[in-house]
Image 1 (cartoon, rainbow, N blue to C red):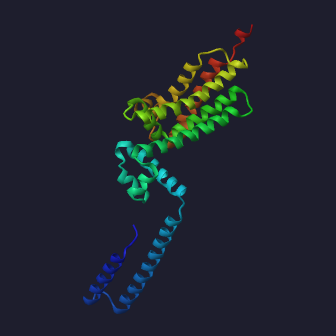
Image 2: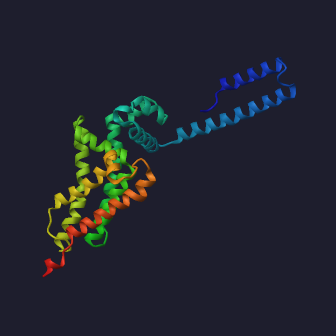
Length: 267
């Protein structure tokens, strides 16, 4: 926390008291005053620079800053636990500015989640459009899903909680539509493989459900999954080096056995 002018006066008063009681020499008192003034000047320069930066931020910069802050707050405390007053305070803005950009806490959450979902959708679309086989595209899409869900697990819990509880119908509908668009990309890749005969004719929808069910169940049911896989899901290093590779290998082997043609089918 930055020092204030009042803090500076209090320190000066304290040093004067020490001098009067003989606990501080005059040269020491003078040096102390010089240091107080020096650091007070430095502090005011820092505050001035910070204020100047805030004033020169564009509307888009401010909006992004609020979204970045809200993202951390929602992840840490959930929707109900993060009040608009806390969000505004943490972002360094007043309530009027928060309402100006987003209108309500629900709209702010929607904007935060929309940014996340759109980011995944863009990556999945890129994987779908790359010049590669359907099998390579599918593996790339799975890696994107797994990486983003494991890296941003708190947000995916919020997403699926909102969808399942349906307490805010407008937000639930928005999330359902956007999440389904991401799932649709994976189904499109599977259908592409079926159409070019690199994949067997399978139940596309259930295949997509099996893929996502595996990822979301293991990463969102930590206590059960920790016992099931005998791994500490609270240890991010263990998630990255043990759990993610294990999920990835399982899905790779499972889908290869399920989707790819076998020699007996070619006869």
